[in-house]
Image (cartoon, rainbow, N blue to C red; front, side, top):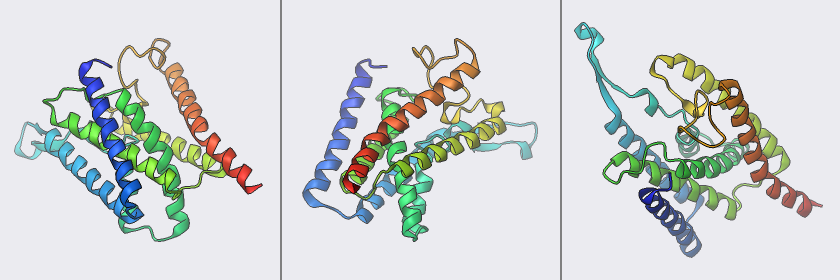
Length: 241
């Protein structure tokens, strides 16, 4: 973390986010245009992951052999899950209330989840690795889209939204516990529930066992969620009064 390559990638990510914001300020593209651009980035990101992470399995017979996507590349990390929300908004969700709830959940999870991903690069920082490009550009664009949603006021954050988002996040965490259990033979770590994202992290580690690690993970998530929502919710309540 924070070696030269990592710092360079953080600089590139900052440029991508800033460029997206400036484009929106100057040309004011519509929500649909912004969503379409994000959808294209997400699709390219997933295609890149698939092309890179297909692995051959050689079994005892023809019927037990084949080429499969690496389990860790399945889109069940919080940031990767955004592709499901993006696709739903692009093609399926028409109800404004449902759309508002999805966008309200996307903003904090994209902004904080992607920011943490940039600072903790689980895919490395090697400039010769195509997946590193996918990793940093995709997460940078998630942050940029979340910032756009905030300053364009497509999302209004209230205390109700905060509690709802916390409930959604905990629900996804429970689902990922089961998914990690299903793929335990491949040691998957979706939403970093099974183990920390990297070794030797100062607070988020297994030094005191998994249960303490999981408790720390929950504490961090709750602190981040409340810290993000609270200023917006208080501002909204003050304006309403």
